[in-house]
Amino acid sequence: MLKGDGRLGHDLDPQDRAPQDACGVFGVWATGEDVSKLTYYGLYALQHRGQESAGIAVSEGDRILVYKDMGLVAQVFDESVLSTLRGHIAVGHCRYSTTGSSVWENAQPTLCSTAGGGLALAHNGNLINTAALAERLPPGATRSTSDTEILTALLANDANDRERSVEDAAAELLPQVKGAYSLVFMNEKTLYAARDPQGIRPLVLGRLEQGWVVASETAALDIVGAAFVREIEPGELLTIDERGVRARRFAPAEPKGCLFEYVYLARPDTTIAGRGVQSTRVEIGRRLAREHPVDADLVIPTPESGTPAAIGYAEASGIPYGQGLVKNSYVGRTFIQPSQTIRQLGIRLKLNPLREVIAGKRLVVVDDSIVRGNTQRAIVRMLREAGAAEVHVRISSPPVSWPCFYGIDFATRAELIAGSLSVEQIRDSLGADSLGYISLAELTAATTIPAGRLCRACFDGSYPIPIEEDSLGKYLLERVDA
Ligand code: SF4
Image 1 (tube, rainbow, N blue to C red):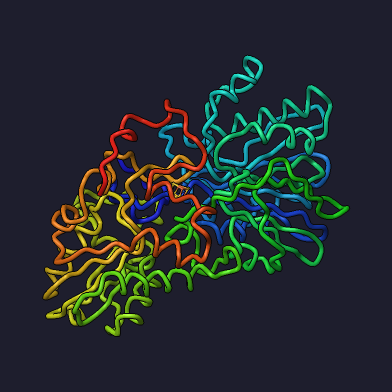
Image 2: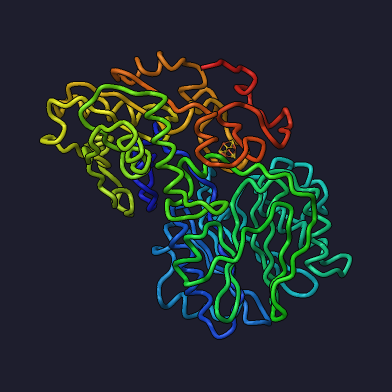
């Protein structure tokens, strides 16, 4: 049963969700600033990373207050709530969660008490040794099985029992934590940030006039007027207080940044490794055009995520670029349940074709990725109904054939269309005249990051952090080369 819970439009079609990122994180330490409002706007800029719940923890030096709820950032917080969240330190979180009925309990930041007070933590990523970590907790320490709750409880417990500082407890605990984690956490007086040794999920440091900001993406620094300082390094722990920022390494860096951030997850106005995501995506489109040329009259994107690659494709191919599909941006951002009649319209809830642009044309349609294929199938059908003479689908990522264990909820391998079908079979299933995916080599080259410094596991099945066989799921071992 679908809930009108404010999620984005693709959730209106439960058969075909886009890849879901598992969260955006934001932290701020600043005197003389309204830190809860800064965090609100920071989360607003990170809303694309998680639309299911949002939360902010704040401290003015003596105690931590947390407010969190289900929904979009703008639905969870209003002026009166924010005015009660006063202090000079805050951490915030927006989440996409796969859990069903107990989703509120999984909203973050999580809060645990320590001997010295409290500890609030927000996490982007996914841990892969949660069960082993949970065994280290004393019985009854937490009832949750959420990886973030367990991490918070362990950290609080370590800081508690041995009367150590949170910083020392984190530096000792984090090397034992396996998986993807970009963390922001705080006690009453100090803000902390840490990134896993592979740096799978992004995390950046910014500077305010009177303080510091940590965020998942540079776009969240821009919105609060913070200057970009640097990326937090893989395996690094930052401690931020009135003495400034202190960096400490808890593990050697083995960088394996997520390649999918470049394709789809990050905002186009974010910068990763010194290069704007928008220009990387345009370059991917150019390379896609050279790998998969076709005779056509018009290049159109699947809005919005296909737009930069479509621009690049048009540029390199010489085929004119145009807008053939109009997106209904606000569909799904409502608490009103769609009626059965409306829901049956499927893709038309989100996209409407511009018939006068499309009719009689040979089209190249550029999209960022294919997960299950239902959306692309519906788009091809819609374009043909609108009079397109030919529909050629071009995809700015290689086939997604493997699940992600590091924080992106694609689907199981059985649900991934490229997990079992060849490219020709997928073309046939979509009803397209031709189908071309960019190769992994060309996609990697477009990022300018060496292949050895990227996680590319959902494309090639090579997981940079070994996955316990138990967590592989029954489909992972049934590899079918597409
Ligand atoms: S498996 Fe794919 S989505 Fe997951 S971290 Fe690696 S590249 Fe990113």
